[in-house]
Length: 291
Ligand code: SAM
Image 1 (cartoon, helix red, strand yellow):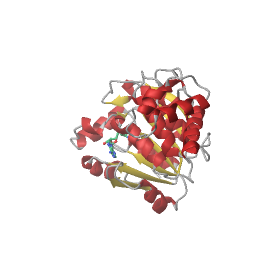
Image 2 (image 1 turned 90 degrees about the vertical axis):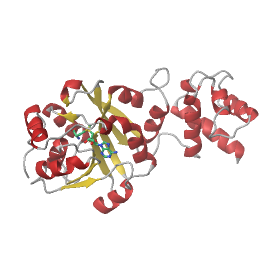
Image 3 (image 1 turned 120 degrees about the horizontal axis):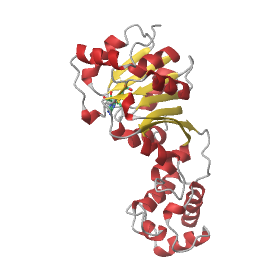
C-alpha cells in the first residue's frame, strides 16, 4: 500500500493545477490541507483493517488516501464528475478503494453496505459538504443503514446543535434526532485555514457512535419525531399551540391538554424545555390514549 501524498497545500495546488480544476461552490467544496487534522479524523473514527468505510465526497482523494491505509475497504461516493479522473490519479496504487460517481442522497446506502460488507455495519467518515449535512446524517439513521459510527467534519454550529440539551439556543429537532440514534462526541475544532478554499465558518469533527438500542423506549418513533418537529417549528409558542398547529399531527385541544398534564407539565410549557425522555413519554401517552 502506498503512503498518503496529499494533505498539504503544495501537493493539493499541484493536483488542482495539473487538472485545471475549478471549485464548485454548489457542491460545498472545501478541501482539507492539514495533515494533523486528517490524522485526528482517522484516530477519532477508530478505523482498523476489519472496517469497511463509506467516504462521502472524497474531493481529490486526500482523506481517501489516509482511509485506504487504515481500513480494509473504502467506498468513496463523489458527485462531481470533474473529480473522477483526478481520483483515478491520486488513488492509483490504493487497491482497496472503490470510487462511485453519484449523488449520495440518491443511492441506496443500505444496499451498498450489503454488497460491499455482507450487511455488517460500516463506518462513515467524511468532510461533509455542509449544504446537505442534516439530510445525509438523518438519511443514514432513518434509512436503517447498518452503521457503526459516523465521524464527520461539519460546521461548528451544527456540531453544537447535535450534542446540546434543553436550555441552550442550539437545542432543536436535530439534537433530539441525533441523540435518539447515537452518542455524540466532538473530537476536534478545526479553523478555516485548514481548508482550501477557506470556509466562512469554523468547523468541528464530530463522532456519532450508534446505539445498539435507543436510550428511550418509544411505542411509535414516527409519532415522537412528529411531536418533536411540531414543538420546534414554532419555537416561541407553547408546546400545546405547537402541537395544535402542526399539519403533521391530528390531535384535538383536549387530547393535547390531557397528555401534557399526564406528563406532569403545566399548560404553558414550551417544547424546547423537554428532554428526549420527556418527548418519548409524551409520545407514548398520546399513542396509548389513541389505541
Ligand atoms: N473529502 C475531501 C477533503 O476533505 O478534502 C473533500 C470534502 S468537500 C467539503 C465535500 C465533497 O463532497 C466535495 O468533493 C463535493 O464535490 C462532494 N459532494 C457534494 N455534494 C455531494 C453529494 N450530493 N454526493 C456526493 N458527494 C458530494
